[in-house]
Image 1: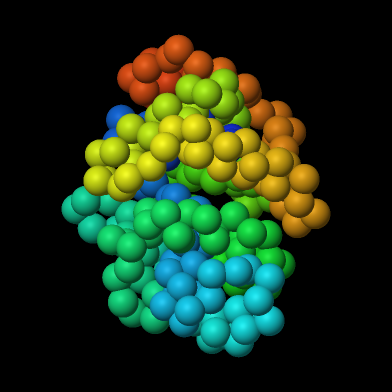
Image 2 (image 1 turned 90 degrees about the vertical axis):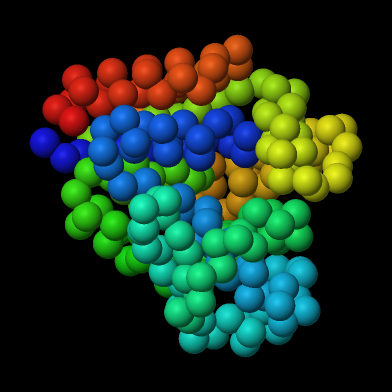
Amino acid sequence: MAIVITIDGPAGAGKTTTARGVADELGYHYLDTGALYRGFAVIALRAGIDDAASPALLDALRGVAVEAYWDENGMRVRVDGEDVTGELRRPAVTKLVSPLSAIPEFRDRLMPVQRAAADLGGLVVDGRDTGSVVFPNADLKIFLVADVHERALRRSRELAAAGVEHDVKDVQREIAERDARDSGRKVAPLVFPDGGIRIDTTGLSIGDQIARIVALARERGA
């Protein structure tokens, strides 16, 4: 039986890597909801807009179509037909995406894009509100947490691997600030979903995280 699995949690808790691993293990599609919002952020930055509060933002992104598609390497993102996947992890995109994703218009535009992915069959999806808002009836809802310092170290390793210069103290501060924004925002805040299962990933390897979630999925018929 194909099921829908949501994996939510704060930045740096291991959602993306874990979700991909779970999807690979189960033979499911993986949907990164945050990547879709990053697609909007890429276009905003190209237009010279780096502040989500800018009055020009809605005009710059009006009519812009963001979509997910899959190839042999997994999920990719197109904006108006152009593949922008290679630009999604730029630091400027990361800085803009959290406040941008709290804007109701963009959430409304991406909701059907995200929900349509469930029609592909088995789906593993990660984000901030996938179990509470996007897929409230998901078969398995996971909420990953981890100590903020460990999350900063993980993000630091990702940035280093991508060749991005950074200071781990700055990374930790940015993560803490994002936690506050995501939990306190009025639109689709980061919350523990009804019926969810909390997993603290502090000290857990990615392999351990994947194995634990796959076991829970198997219990639900995956």
